[in-house]
Length: 212
Image (cartoon, rainbow, N blue to C red; front, side, top):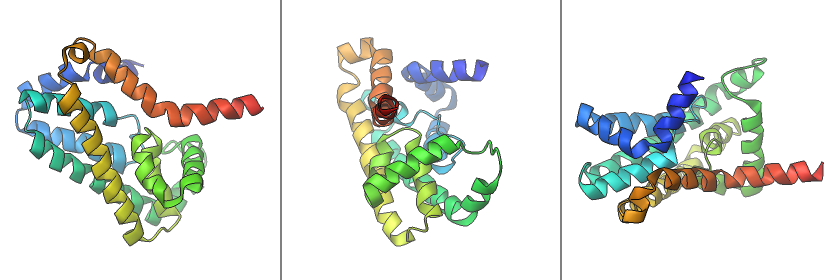
């Protein structure tokens, strides 16, 4: 419970925590940010990491000059694409073994089923679209690898999705993150980003509940 409380606090006050990280670790901050984005997209056990809000906050700090915006942009695109590539190969090589484990704590079947339904609905484009849906973006590469999608085809979608995702949130943070109204209500903005990002999973869930 303590970990969850700390995680929620970090996400909702991510701008302040990022400033502290920059002050304490300097250039090493770029490696820390790379590892967070890489891990969120690269491992099915880390869907809780704050990708969207983190990218937005990085963009806002880049506009202030606290971080080098261009360096962070390139580095985090590489992290997003590289993480998804690793996740794809995990699904392709040992995905079936993971699924065969009874009561596996490595992945939640509920998340996997939602991702599979998303994948069935959108096809290959799901790799791009899933980037903008928390949790599902962590499982989409795994499902693609599990389903033996060709690596060449997957890579095209992966690069397009990774570039689009990182650029959208970082540029949004860069251009609007330092507007006075946004700065003064940054926690609410982060909460709104999380809520909007989760809508694609919340709406179908509520619709299925109504049908029952």
